[in-house]
Length: 467
Ligand code: MN
Ligand code: MN
Image (tube, rainbow, N blue to C red; front, side, top):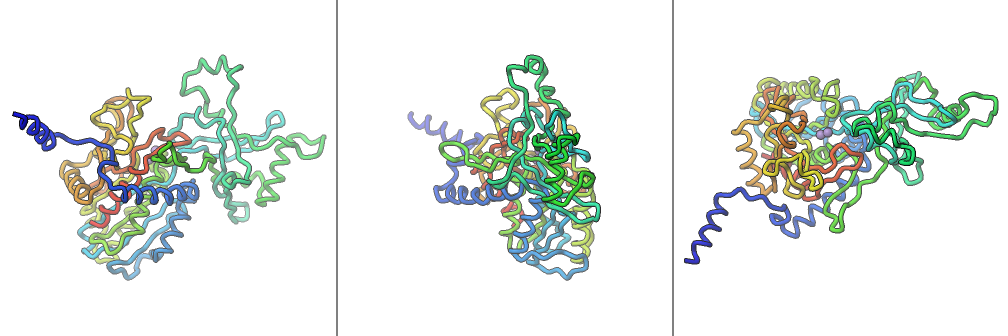
């Protein structure tokens, strides 16, 4: 009689889909490896806060691993490691496979741009003896989150004579930082009546950069003059040089462990440097893959992937075509046989805001890397929707390689929605699916991921490009 209980247990084990904390699928040794992996990830987060810095750090790591800059016409053979730098804002890398190129490439695509505040082209002004920068936000942000936090400034200024100045200020402990102000609650009676979207308006995202005047009582705009004088002495720039500059204000926080158990990482821009770093780490560890392994770290995902450094442009297609020709095939044939992991984040279930998710179909922190069959909004608008056949293949691969993984849809039906670069790559006739890390507080200045999920993303990408 007591066997009935056991039978039920057995049957459930056989028939039910099991969802569990990744810890229970990992040994203590693997957890230790995962924590160690995340120490390097935190360093990457601090060193590469913008797309330009991410490219710079990536190129250094690639060169160290023996990757060579790719020039079309190069003689290529299995095991060769090459890269192409697209304007310092996106980077492609490949390890040539042992299989013929016409059997397709294994492509991982992540993005290295994150939501932030860009300076306008004429940013500098003085108002009531305070100098400020006007900004234009980049990507989808909740504007109120970007006030009253320390900001650092990163980017490049091209001077009138064509020379370039690189800027990174606010990251070093001894650097000053910058800040967008908010109203004190005492005087916010009217502001508090605004809705959340309007709580802070776009034109209120002005960054404070100085308050001491140049020592001349007669001069007007003496605070602005003093700032320009400091900038001239430090960078040799004048006000007109802002016109040909790309300066990005980002949170000045460093990446830190979160929780008493140190199980999570808090940082600016996990979306999508968490997948960029894990895809890059997989590429760096990739030796002699069967299929040519291609990794692209792209720019402009957060503004819709347009522009020549975004994945709606032809730069990925051209790279594959060049590779194909140098290996005796053509781009169209190679792309049509290729498979892609669109390596981007998804929303993690947040116990404080459970109402936006459908519990059977959302991603959970610590349940591993999340596989997202489709994204989009409303009736799956704007998605590429991976086929059952491709999902089946991915599922077998991840299980075979002991990757802890889960599925996840971005929120309840009709709750909102979003997309990734998956659709643009699928449009090149490539089998594509979203695979990435669940994130809490996505697009906030400080986002949270779980270390187990970060490590499982690395394992997933490594398994995929080696396959
Ligand atoms: Mn993203
Ligand atoms: Mn995003």
